[in-house]
Length: 246
Image 1 (cartoon, rainbow, N blue to C red):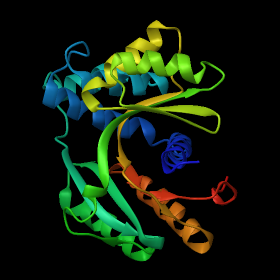
Image 2 (image 1 turned 90 degrees about the horizontal axis):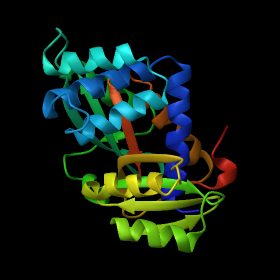
Image 3 (image 1 turned 180 degrees about the vertical axis):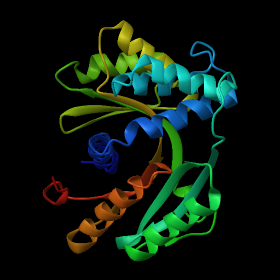
């Protein structure tokens, strides 16, 4: 399987883990607040907000929580001002990491990220040292049981998708960020619901990581995503299926 598939499965596992720990709602609230602050409170006119609100609904967040978060972003309700920060880092086994955060205290967040990296085989990198290995893309997956490759390819390419690859049990669809909504809408209109759909950072190449380094990098990502201010962690590694863990 490709690094993209590994990445997607890890993101799914970590998302479930966050939910179990009761932190996913607070992280989504931050995202909603910042999206509303930067692009307005209308989900129809703010694509970023629309995507995050759907993420909130998929996580069963109550509508009142979503509404309050939007109003805090637009200033209709008092709220905390969050700053968006991106850290670049190296992880075990020669991996590259991009760490996205939202924080009301930059010094605290930087200290926590640095400490977590230093204690678990990672190291902060200079700005630009890692980011060139990643590209911002729309990324959707569709189970093979829902659609055949040929039919799906015709549909998504017509809607503006960049690429489609079939890996394991799923089809992976890549788009430019500006084409993501059109491709997702085309799938929904055709009665094909994506199993996952998000704007993300995809690596241009992956690093094969096995043995002790595989456990170390998975543990590091787990610890980073468990930090209150960290929203997303992206990595460029590929790990054998039998070493992915539970």
